[in-house]
Image (cartoon, rainbow, N blue to C red; front, side):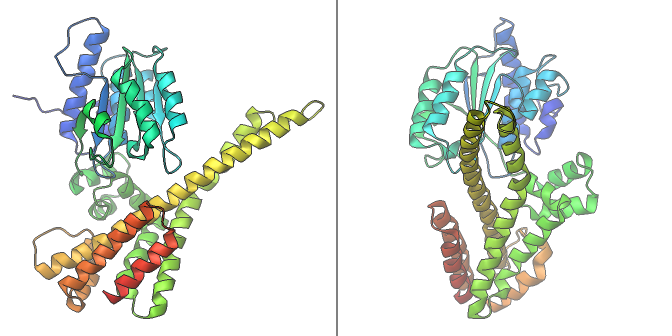
Length: 402
């Protein structure tokens, strides 16, 4: 009989993922035996892992916790030693993080990473490579990664995070060489408990945030701690019943785009300026005296390259924020369909039950389904690089007419 894992140490960061904790913890114990030169259970530890699950389920958290368990000095994920702390915070010398700041991960970036991953660990037990959003790998980057996964260095572990193991997210060849760990959507009760116990959120507010976050732990925390995030959500959920006149289409489009832009600006502003100042300082661009003209020119050129990357990151952040708003809209129409059908299912937006009931009285199931399909079509159009405003206006026109 398989023992039930009680999360401890680094594993407490994972919310409602007992099965994943069990598998990864067993692998960390096997890895420790390998390092000690002892026999390990067959198949418990492997060199490539694919962590999948819906947004907010904790894919990247699971990857960092596993990396920490592999680098743990006192055990297999104590959470207190320097190996655990630096791995969890992304500063461990032998844990390399690939977090795409643009819309994709390039082949040049992946080739550089593969070369670095081939080196032996310097301070830890393993060389660990974490690729968040592995579904953003370009075809060339996937091919570069495949070569490393097919012939892995002895002490290197690749951890890929993606929404699913579908070929549209991860190539079949890479998937076939990875061990799959699937994360599920955490229960609202588990999320509320973590917000209250770990983050110090008022229990009533924690319960509300957990009930409306769609199983996304990070979003629940933000809704519970950021008043502006709560206001932006309210603005989005006013749209379905607010499309009464033709002009409302353009007003609501402006609101949706503004919400996404504001969120991207808020998230990027402080980080962008700090990055520029750090780069200029590192390259001597702010120095004075003789012989610094060349340094200043080099610094300004580097700053321009940085600004280009920051612009790409801001575009991605804006699209991610807009997608989150579209998910909220889709959840509203889904709740209306639940009401019309009389199904016994939990609402995505239980705090908007009155609006949902009003919409259910006004719309037919067919027109509601058409509206839901319009939202999903908008998400797909933006994924294919249709200009967000054009996609949003087309969607809102369809939402108004039903």
